[in-house]
Image (cartoon, helix red, strand yellow):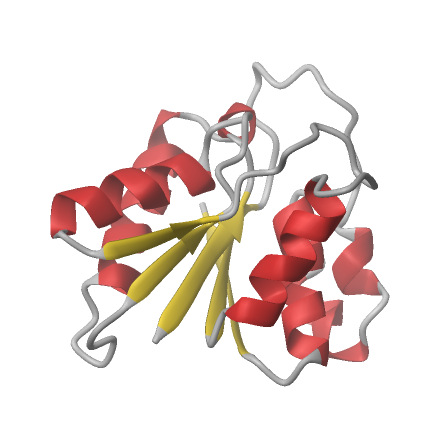
Length: 154
């Protein structure tokens, strides 16, 4: 089973939410129902969920499929959009790991809710989290009929 784990870059976590996310990743990858699991990572240059997934997979001896973007821009030959679509197409299930609020140290653009979730009737209840490209990837997988799980760490 190919299990994709996506979510925020490291700058959207504090120490507490980072630990919770890392514990959750290990829990997902070591779930007994996930026999012969291959973990899929987007290998984000922002670190966070992608890199923590790779670290956990290595620690647990789980095979990896890394989908690193070739260009660090949204729409390019194999930029973030194409990489995210590739993740959505090739996974059997996807786990989106998100936080509900920005850490005090966060300096980037902020949104009141995730506009990716707000667009979907099924996502209205989970939209109160920090926006993430990983969430966009989850909705693309959802459209393809993949099993999708959103995890909000606090």
